[in-house]
Length: 328
Image (cartoon, rainbow, N blue to C red; front, side):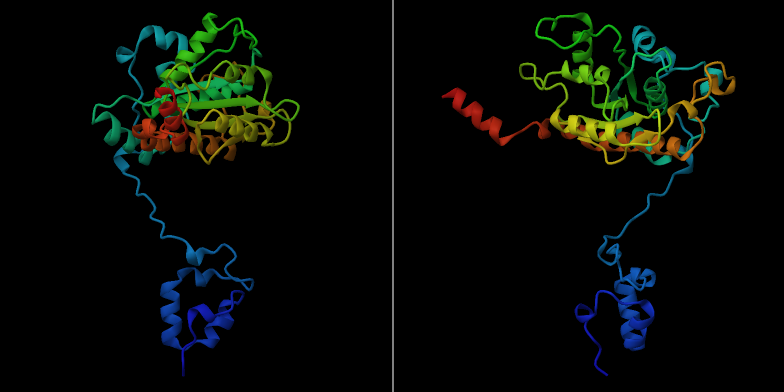
């Protein structure tokens, strides 16, 4: 019997029907060529898994499962630690809290093998949040994200938007404006966390980005940087703010990682300020917390891969042409 060619097979066919039309040898060859055939439903291979590239799952090295590469107080700049690391907790808490128990072997191994052992700079991450409330949930979420990154060896700096003037054309020399711009130039990547208010990000957050220019002379404070976005919601889960943050990141010429975090009913997801567990005001266990961990792990991986090529990303044909014209 002549074996039908794979290309002539109908696209919507059940496994049972397909098996009945092929002889044993052809079925075995087809199964090896397209392993996903075992998972076809009566509607066919709707996810097109048969055409997918082979996926190699990284094997977690047990030696790195719970390793911390956090900057030791003795090695840290005291002024930076006091001003930009308000997320740090007492050692008795940070050594045993939920962040310390995360299995982050793959990212941790990348940090050590591709940065620390080669004596390269730690990843420099700027964290921005979008609320001035005393108990700001975007700030609390930003702190939790910072703790994860700090454990993974990042030099994390959180900018406090309090005192930043509303964007105008007069106050470019304001200390808070200059501080923000210098931090952005210093950074390799950003984390943006905003509440969703009236269906979009807050004015407090947008004002910070408005003060960061696309270019300052020959320096581009954000171009080529990686970006992770997150939002907190007062009500049910929404993605309006993170979608707006993604658009904003694109306009700032940044590379936004695929993953994102959105916390619904944020007031229910954090412990009380005086809760004894992990120091109070901590993000409770949930799938939403797991997604935040995903985002931070992904940000570290992307930034390690992309940072060596930041200069390449700033090389544009149109700008080279403009320079040629200016030279003439």
